[in-house]
Length: 578
Image (cartoon, rainbow, N blue to C red; front, side):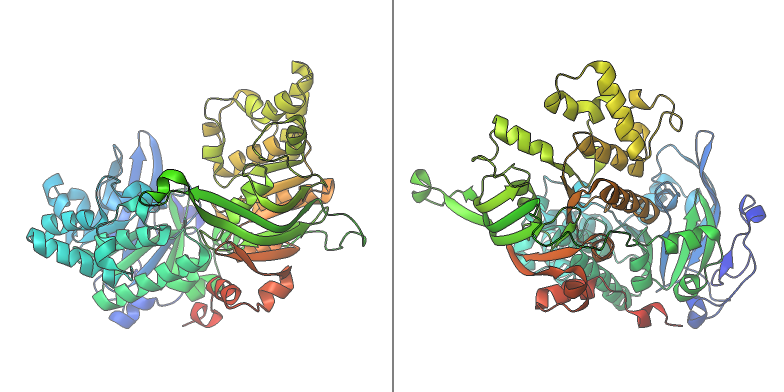
């Protein structure tokens, strides 16, 4: 086997054997002692089988002390299973090969010995902290639990150490936050708490499994900077699992690329991005959102299909004490918002969590009562907007929505035919079953799904499809009633980069062919650049900047917009460091 620091590609014939191709360069490990320096973790011919199926096929890589290695690939490539296998957390999988950590083979240790490794020598930060944290324990209690098990500290020492760890990860008011439950923290604070818990035992290696996927772009940058700072302070190594190539360029020293359970290429980040050798790596790097929209604006005087002025949305809140018996307080989620969307155009809406983006979308969809002026295809919602009057029902046909996560937005108990045809039952109840099925098949064909490709398509259930295919089903469900406006709520954030590109290309094609208008809600600036004609920036419920997409993103005027754009930009100098 070649030096683990070398730039390598696995040739097609060698992939099955698990060998590695010729060295092409020297990785960061050389600066830590060259090819002779012992690796902190040395993985050799790791294979993971579930039954007869191999999901990881003879993977070999190394991680040196103080190094940041990114393991990248699409969903199903085996990267998360690889990480879980190192901790022997891959369920009933059969694991072979070697994983040497400081001279001990993790795959041959007893379960008792592995309990000392998990959370001790190796700690893990999971993708979604809300599901990884215990909702019945405070943050301080959960960190203290690790300290008691791994450090044998007293209760008072654990409490103080938990507060210190929260302070180290940058959580404001750490003493107060230690007494908070997970649901009382923001997404970024929960992820920081997860990192604090992982650092409690001072691990030598941190496994970070998509630690920023669920976060806004500014929070992503903050978490990456935090991990980099902590890594420098403690000297721990980090194995980052991600499909976000911008994160890799910004964070990692080396990158290893996985495809269908095999490691196809690895090397220094700058070298791999500059001259990828494997076709799969080249495809990943090329899978950035591409702009392919009709740039010409509608003729002057064309009425907008979506228009709002001084839009206001507020929620009733309880007041403390006796006052709460007689009246309610008010939380204003959207204040004074103004926007317009012309036929065949896309308006992007960007902002951090809590900025009011989703509330704005719900008001536009007629799901929340609102103040100010709002019209959809020239008509206003009959207030309260949630009432299902004939006028409101007719208007709902004109504006449909595609949600962020198709797995949770599609009913698992309905077939494809029932899911896609549901809108026809509501808005075209007079259609017969044969005609309804014909319409469903046509809608599926428009989004690239057909019976020829997927036999038994109409009778299948959502869990039988990939993430990108499920999002196509969600788009077909929205399109079947022939709306004029689609609200796209983070339609690609849960998808891999290659699938994201395919879905965006599909949306662009549908817009060109059907003249659809989109309200695109996202925190991905690259998606805004590819899709939007105009953009509004929201902060704390207000629109702080708006205008043509090139004007706002290339020359932002508001400090908040400048911060958002800067957080989404990968410094070329950092990406090209030798």
